[in-house]
Length: 96
Image (spheres, rainbow, N blue to C red):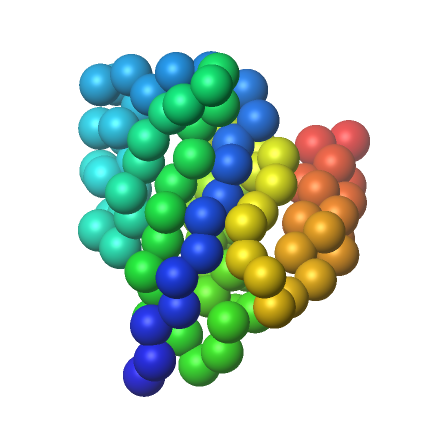
């Protein structure tokens, strides 16, 4: 299965703390490298999946499970805004 590289930027946390890093790794994110810069926490992924969209969707679903919303993503050849908008709508519907 191919590995896809992309970055997700979380909304909310402004700094990567040891506690947040521990939570990400404890949740099984062994394919992710968290970091912070300029007041934003980002997670670089190298995720195996059948296609790039599935890789990104699974990473977003995992972040929502941890109560962290994804603010934006970084990848050049995919409509990241559409995927994030759909994920935010699902999150909002679940929290009504």
